[in-house]
Image (cartoon, one colour):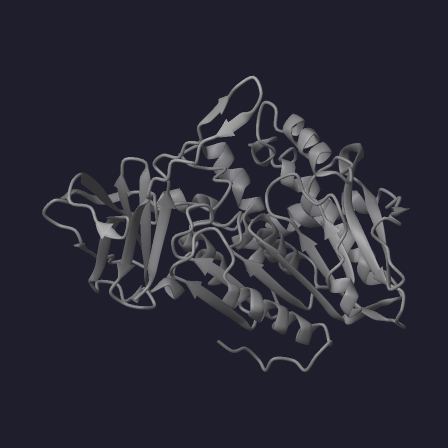
Length: 438
């Protein structure tokens, strides 16, 4: 049986009394949190369309079922369109059961709410049959080919800045940047082994949403891998978390970066990001110390989206791993389900809808030819499971998806462990995992 619980403290206080000669702090007041647990009656949380799912819920405090209060249960199409709601009197029904179904492929989300506390469960109905709501623009390929050609007319002007603070006798680290369209630059970090003889396998990573990297990779490079970490932003990252956070806050005034430029496809923020990172990957692949046959990419959330995007756009990538990828199925709302982050389209805005097709990871995923692994959380309210499956189902290359019924927007240990083992094989560091395993 799959389970999830969200535990939120309803109150916590620390009382301090100060006197002239000493400061005395009282012990924190401990308040047991409310726990809302929701589970499906199938352990894997998978069902056929039309099959009944039974959600089983319990609301506890101090490990005992609450005997007062009323919880609201909402069943929805993956967090979007409400299918039903009902009120549960915890004095009479705790534990409780709620039944539901879907007649079309998708995810039925069960959300249990009691005041500020929430618990979720998700049931997948024939998810491998979910169809993308996003249409492939007729000039999708031309749009990106034209963008690449536009950028190719601009000299790369690669700038490498040594970072001795992070370098060791085993590897060197650099800050790196490339010229980009519209008189901008794209920034990242490069780590290169120096205690071994190349050519070296290479791996690329893009971070999740936020300010980006402010330091280089010092993990994979220890295994003899050249690592390229690329930010999506156009600002020069400082090497301090506090400084980069300040720059990032300025970037998001008055509008968060992932919405900037919409609905103009040529001004949308991610156009520069995609073209710039694609250029960086090409530059990396052309290095004489890179083993082009062992060239991989991985990422989570926004980084998972860029893994799908680059794997479809750039054929230098020979293996890919995308955890809870974002930027998928922007048009999902048309089918009454939740699009993935950043939900750039949430209503019938024809201009945003038209633009979104050029930046939907679904449409890049159609062109993936390398083997790929993907992870999806059934209770992910940031990158909805239906949006992840919409992208995954378009991939025609060898693939495997990790279903995580209990997981929200996160990465499971199961997937994390497999990802490392699988990528090490694809990078030629160990015997390859043949071909996939669960």
